[in-house]
Image: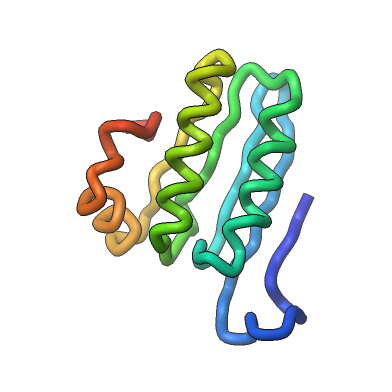
Length: 117
C-alpha cells in the first residue's frame, strides 16, 4: 500500500508517503516526509490496517521522517497504547532526523514508546 500527498489541494509544498507491506510475520509501515495534522489520519488508517492483521510484529519505520508535530506524537502514543492491549506487537524504528528525535525527547515520550535501540 502506498499513499502520498502529491496531487491533493493544499499539500503541494508538503512531502508525505506511507508504504505498508508484509514479510513473513512482520508488517512494516514505512513513513517518509512530514507527519502533521493534514496527513495524520492517513497514517492512522494504515496503522489500524496493520493492527487488525495476524502479524507477530508491526514495525513502524520512521527512518525517513523529517518532521513531526503534536498530532504525530499523539498518533504514536495511541498506537503504543493499542499495542499494549494487543500483544505488544509494535516496534518503532527511530527517525534519522535530529529534529524528529528532538521533538520526541522534548515531549517526554521516548521512554513510553517501543523504540528500537
